[in-house]
Length: 272
Image (tube, rainbow, N blue to C red; front, side, top):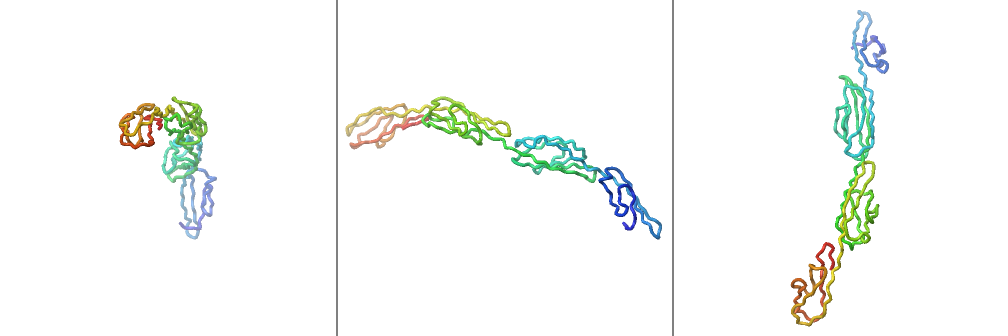
């Protein structure tokens, strides 16, 4: 409390009382403080424990990981306490299970401490997270033969397409070269994370043209005419909406002239 005295002990400045902790290292050290003057000499003693700060010895085995993967680390740091922080979450284990949940650079902080005075040492590590691509094919699996060209699509780009008569980069299928039938196609994305693959089976459906069988001219005031077409079970329209059922038209109210009528096939690949 009073100044003007002199310090004694190992690694201490006798005038200022400053202890050289770099030289002393850890351990118990005794110090005394003595004031001399006209009055009897006054002195006091203190024992100081110097607690060593931990030496951090952490190895990140892989600083590049896929998102939602755990950090693979080794920690041989000798310390009383271990504290990790990542993305607002704390971990108090020496070797925690930290899951990287963001793309790009991810910062992880580590603090090792000793003793009640929390003598500590810290370090920061950076992990690069890579997104796992989504190869899911989003295209329709039924295609009409007369489309000729059809391009498959997927959630994520950058992959390779495989299959009969398909462009490996664009995913464009030459439908006319394949013809009707079932065809398997795969889409594969290769990157830092494990290969992602999706498969689709495409059905190329035969296209059948609508064909109205030849008809002749009809006299005015004809009551009913019967038409036919291929393939069967299509839908008739036109001729001034006079269609009755199954190609039968009631035309007795029509004036002489030319009239258009239509037949539309009732199939997946319809035609008119």
